[in-house]
Each structure stands twice: as structure tokens, then as C-alpha cells.
Image (cartoon, rainbow, N blue to C red; front, side):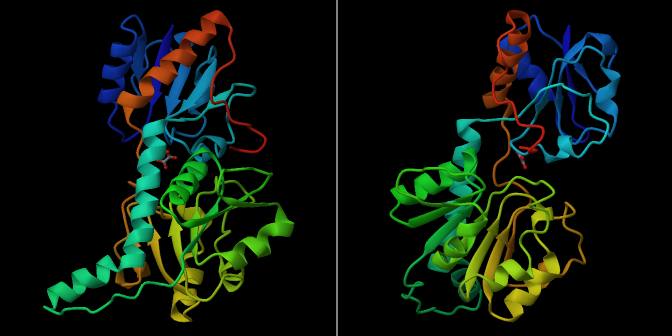
Length: 308
Ligand code: OXD
């Protein structure tokens, strides 16, 4: 029996090393050189080729290499009934929270302006920050909740929005369509941490921007497909959005001729807000793998219907 690592273009050597460390008896196969597909019980995947997972007749679970499972769910040829697990990891949450918080602080304290001012040899007198920063976390999953809680610890006013009712200590939580307007009215920084499903694709669009307070700052650490790129440019031109920090894009790497590159108001990072660390995560996959023998329920299974 084996675990197959199916992650085109990703460095797989660390996974092999940490699986070996977690349990040396486990047989690990690496796509595309899978010798015995009938022995594969777990497929650890990141952007696998469409239909690939149908080749493993004894697959017991599909383990996503990251937190967002959209790249799995989007495969119309997924084996039916096979559970899909996602990564839930303290290190992943911590890295994400630090990224989002640095984005907020960067904006609040105008570090980029100071960097540019320094290049010009200019002493930029900016003691004034936006009077109040109310941070709205759109999507209160594991990562969203962690960011919101850490913001509260830092003394920010944190607001959260989720599809279903959630409670996070110290966070003003809103849920469901009816409470969206109040959420959007309360904030001047919007952090998108939504899962990517049909209902959330293109959610960050001109209609949503128009409902925000003028000058709201946007951070997107979820997926590029949440954002309508041209709507963001237009909203910045109109002053409706003051700027953005984007870690995810429709196409990655972001094409060289994309208009985002030439906009000073938009900060770009290369989808590195929070990257799964095999050292930290291999053990939870091995733990789930052992659950096949003991017939215990897998941990961190997503709802295939919902898509997250
Ligand atoms: C993830 C990612 O979903 O890295 O984990 O985007």
C-alpha cells in the first residue's frame, strides 16, 4: 500500500523525507512515475492533472497539499465518494496571520511611502494614520478566525463575515446575506479569505466595492478568481478603494503585461502569504493514512457539496 504524491511542478523531495521520518515503513510513490496504481490508498495532491485520480482504484482519501481545495473540486472527473482532506496547521495559520497583519500595518504606517520617500531623499512627515482601522475578514474558516483573533489581541477592531453563524471571541461577527451590508459598512480594510466556489468566484467586483466605505483598503489572500481585476483598477481610479495587497492572481506568475504591475497602489506578492510546510504537515497526513487500517474517521475532511 502507498501514498502517491501528485503535485506537478512542486518540490516533492521534502514530502518524501518527512513521510519517511514520520513512518519509515510507508511506501511513497511520486507522480508521474507511479509503479503500482492499485496500491495507492492516499493521493497527496496539488493541481493534479484532470482525471488523474480515477487511475487509483483503491484510493481511500485525497489529501490536499494546502488549505484551499478548489483545485481538487474543480476536477469534473473525481472518484466518487472518496473523502478529501485539507491541511489545518498552526504554522500555516500563523504565517497567514502574520502576512495579513503586516499588510495592514504596512498600510497604516505607510512603510511603502517611506521607502519611496527614502529613494527620493525626502523626509516624509506622516504622523497621521487613518483615524480608525476596522478590519473586516471575509470568510471565517480556520485561517480567517486566526487572523481575526490575532487582530483583536493587537487592539484592532475586527469584524468577520461568514456564510453560516460563527462566533469568535472579541470579533463582531456577521453572517448570511442579510447582515452583509452592516458588515461592509463597519469596515475600512477588507481581507478576502473566502474559499473558492461557484458562489464566491468574482465576488470582489464593482458592486461589492460600491457598497464599501470610500477609501477601503483591500487584501486578497484567497484566490485570484475571487477578484474582478478590472473592477479593482476602476475602483482605485475612483478612490473607492485606496489600494490593495494581492497575493493571489488569475494567472500565476502574474503576466508581465498585467496592469497591476504599473499601479503604485497595488502591492504584489507571489502567492507566498502562507505556504504548506511539509515538515509541519506530513505527520497529519500519515496519521490519516493510518486511520485506513483502524477504520477511524479521517481528520480535516471537507464537505464535497459545499466545496470547502
Ligand atoms: C493553500 C495555498 O490553499 O497555498 O494552501 O494557496
